[in-house]
Image (cartoon, rainbow, N blue to C red; front, side, top):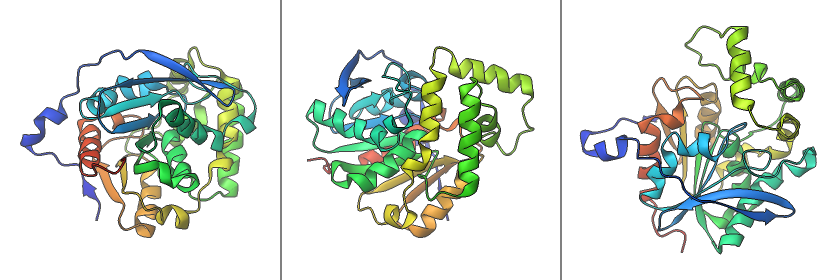
Length: 291
């Protein structure tokens, strides 16, 4: 059975969204690609990687996750390459595993030997691959909204081909429909176009299309992910289609701590108090592993 994120009254302090505070942005060179990041707080380092077409601000700051983590830890969030204020190559080969290597290069830049790592959606796929490529660098893993690319099928390749071609045109139509909450009527074409314009404002569609085309380069065998030694948390909304992948991973990895957020969709989960509380409780339950 999955443990739902049910909160007692004594945790009210964690439930409230923390006041947002602007952290100063910095950059470093990651094998020729500038990577933008922010950090705030003190204590054990927690690195956060956002989702596709998102950035630090939308992925972590506005939902209150960054400030919640910074109250207890040294919070570090980065704009993934192709996103936000980081560099935006147009070549597929510049993405895939390189997106994870940006994390370890950032750690090296900051002199961090080992850290907790948190990813959401695309960021969770990056975290899952990092857990296999460089497990010694991470104390705990948090997979939010996605459980890793657990294999690759012809249907997966068709999806990537369609979604990357749409991205070349500045559209998120197929992705929007794929991640739409299962308990709501389908959106109109006008809603899809308005959402695409909003989410892609100021972004580089060619870079984002290259990110999408690199998805097959991030596949992790479920058997290997299930064997990683780090404590692992999964957080997903019950209205998120990715819930099925978490159920597959839980079956292969019984020690996975899986928290489901009732009614939350792929797009809404990080903004819920349940997400913040589950994450902080998990991190606080595994102290001293970064030393």
